[in-house]
Length: 366
Image (cartoon, rainbow, N blue to C red; front, side):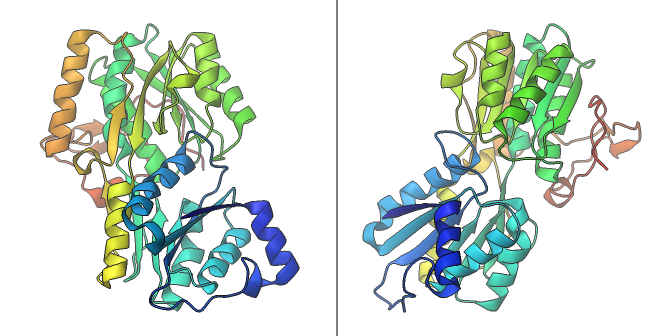
């Protein structure tokens, strides 16, 4: 069972009736009541993007449990007080499983989990862990390394670009691996970045893409945009582009380079199973190609056959753990050592990455 709500609907209810009755009368859930699962996301859920991928990840849960679960999706909720109030309200109404779908929801969601041990919380892209609180993130960098290989082979200028949402480690690692993958094919590749500081701003995203194209970037990475604005702008300009989370190929039939798709259903299903069994234990879930959460799809036919063979070989090594994009030597953008020769960054270092590799020409925001 799926119920979809918007920010306007929820906040109107909060204003009119207060926290106790925003979603209707508070229910005392009996043991035979369905498990209430709520997904809260920062942008509208359309046919592509982050929110779409999260929602799709719950479809197999609904299919498996049917009427034993009741899923509510609340979209377009800005990080901050609104999100905190809404997350608290959904739990107050008896929902015992919360997916907080944005990095900026972390503090409010963690406080909620600590107050109510009977609630299970999954939090996107964070780092805090509690007995009933698990952060989850995708190893996008494994896919962006592979697309970097393709980008360098197809680029005629040696200049690549990325329109990126926020300068958080998850997105920084994606850019760095994209750069390193490209440099494995062409060591002279440079990558420029425009930070738009938004998860959802179609006009700003399109403007950023056009700015990069004006700088002769001929492959653009749409890094965590929930709209196809970057992809569409690149198609119109005849420039290759790729993105995260879900396919946007229909918006760029000729110049779509590929998609680092995420399938959250294995993780969501296992987490719901554990909650219902009373065995859930909070842990940091950092999932990638080997977990079948990250999958690169929609490869462009323009990629030469020999390059594609090397990409697939590298993908197999990433999947079996015999290769990591973050194996040294890796130099930082300022020329200092980032990773020593022969060393490999562990997950803890990757999720805390706050520096760019050499070849990324745009400084990180202060």
